[in-house]
Image (cartoon, rainbow, N blue to C red):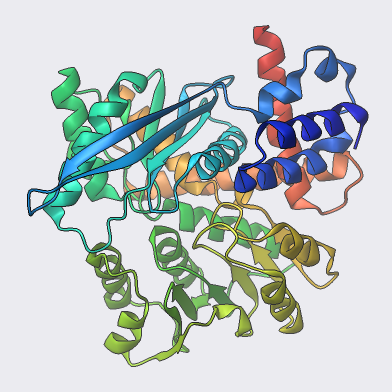
Length: 447
């Protein structure tokens, strides 16, 4: 790591001492791009500082009334991280763990993930410390409306385009978009993505992140002269990402045998591979209960309370739940089980030490979420394009465009790693490829 990058890292620790998630992702990124960051232009323009800190961030209060008539107040955030390539673009997360550090970490990851798609979108993230679990539809709708009344001033098709994330699905996006229309008086379809098909949404948007992850894994297997046919996938979570992985994996001949939640994990030896199971996952997500045991009860599979799926042997491990879900102990289990591929679906799902252990293992090929987890935002950008021309592509057309985008991301990551003598290090490669695209755009636009 050169002196300039070391100084940037030191300054960040001093400036944000209480934001561990944000510091973790930036520290890893700086380590990865170091071979490509020796250009004196970067230090002269202080470019890296301007790349790893947000351009602006907003916080706001969100008062709302529950079904008993009692008023609650939550905290909302939006970080607009980088707009060098296009309008800010990133998800909204409703979860009690949301705070400034988490929002900055998500915005940072989103910026570089978006850059890899090759599409003209910048990076952002946001959300609130609201817990939708146990809340009625009316309560969640009122919260979404109050949230949008605070946020609408800062977003728009050419400014900042939010989408969904944990706790924010198509239902919530619908309520958010309805509130946006009421307060602005504009039916601006591209102001949000992840919308329903009847009012400007894109086909396969909900499944896209999982589809993209499987397409990326397929390219990794192709590199090894193999295919997904007959492969067993160990997956965490049961949200949109996991749901998409299950569907595309089954379509390409593999099967997902685990899902997980805060309560533990299930093992389904037959694979999560039928329409009935896919439909039940949707019901589980919208139940608000956040428990995976319901799947075991419905389909008679094994349930392991309080445990993680990484103890199960398989061909590939795909964490799809949340940040830092995978610890050093989990990484050791994955290695001991002779898992061949580690592919991140969720943003920063492994702790720093766990990821280092996986990357250092000669047995495992690894891929980071900035590359393999880009499918969702790729289709979000395709949704924006469809809204702009007022035309809706077929499911097959969107899926094929997504496959090509993920293939191009894989190629860019592999080429960047090779260009800097890093071999087949796809994680470093995707960071370098994204860094180069954003830095060139920033240099071209001046200070």
